[in-house]
Length: 108
Length: 120
Image (cartoon, rainbow over all chains, first blue to last red; front, side):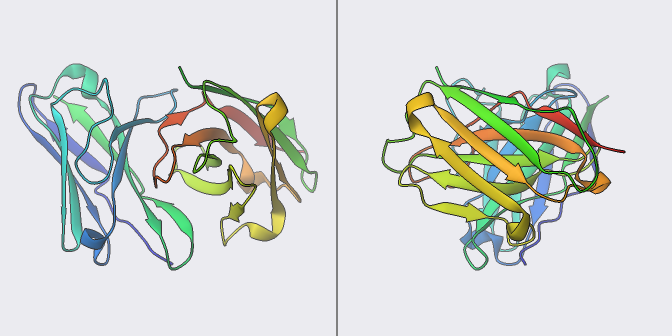
């Protein structure tokens, strides 16, 4: 089955740029979605189809995807961006929606 | 405005069957391409997709849990129901229902989640 890998944690100073990676075999051929989840809350879609943003999501959130790595980029990080971030793809081979293990972003 | 809300028991015993209901509003499950999914998250662990029902009543299940899951829809009452048989303590998790937009591969909107504990 298809597997996604993410670093357990990323730390970033306010105002700096956070990059959260999501690794998978030829993930560049997949459409990658990213979810933000704050403690005790439901996930919120922040980036879809590699780099598109749903309405209401700040432009600070962007994404890229190529080769074996997709990346969520948070520019000008704010304290309110502290959360877990999970990537997600649809694996056509197994007809399975696959989530990454999640990355905890800490704002220093 | 799309909203979803899960309901069901907070505690089930091992070997019992879990039944969860998702009540939704703001969209119709008769719209072509739309789907409603169930996703769970054990405490401190990753999200795991369980099942999805489409507008045309097509159903998809996690290959790892397929034998234990049944998903159904009631379009007249805007509900989607998930049943999971033979519950085990490892099934303790927050269970979410989520809206899948037409012909997309993402989950645009999630319910608040329902914590289910499996314990004798």
